[in-house]
Length: 341
View 1: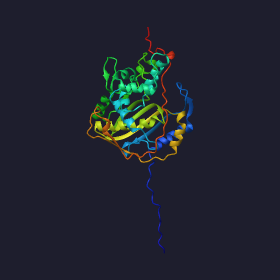
View 2: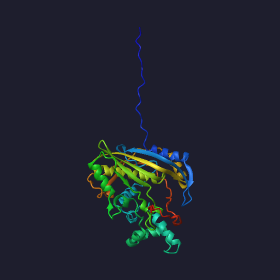
View 3: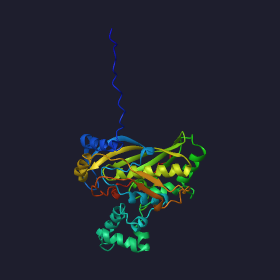
């Protein structure tokens, strides 16, 4: 009698799909399934879907996209600007970061077209912001945007509430609590709900975030109401991933996940061709972000505290910023709730 032997096929190790495919799949989803509409202010076409999500395990690399080079220096400076509670673009301009230039210039241009101020190109306008602190104080403010709401939320009784300091304290003392939410959405400063002259330059796109501590790891979930998927979302992913890492360090926890929820998720018409090019590219390994371990206070971080290692992206793909937002004053109404007589 012959011995029978059975051969079993050895199980192949499961290969994890690169997390950047979440982003590339999102682009493909919008291009295929997006409803095409038009941005009301510029008339530019937009392909849009509603309600999407991504998540990144930050212990497995820093999600700085590799299918195009992302402007990390600008991301770090912008985040530090938020953390300072600043609302004037001068800090950014002084550090050669120009991602917010279009919004104050848009307001200046309105007055320029009425003949109320001298004619300036955007480059001339930004140079005056850089060179003249008084001019920057007058024309460089964006209204009470992100940093102001995070660090100096104006209370009804005149106090300025530091939401971020509160969130850090709660996360340190009570890691099992579920209410640690920081909001940038303040109706008092949004379009028609704001008093004339007090509105934000643009209502916050990344509107609120929620901190969570589970098993000694701090994670952050962001809700973003409006997502410019080609230009803005790569910035948002890296910025909030870095914020998650900073908060984990400040609170004394290991870093967990960055979870990204998106509302109106869109691609502008002048980015369609760039998106098609990016979707052809294959992701490379995520880099590593190193943060100065000596920093334990949220107010102490400086640009030099951050080092990126092993970032090997594909070449950059350029696209113009679409300076959306704004509303027509003729649409203004009083949205104050009327009391019953």
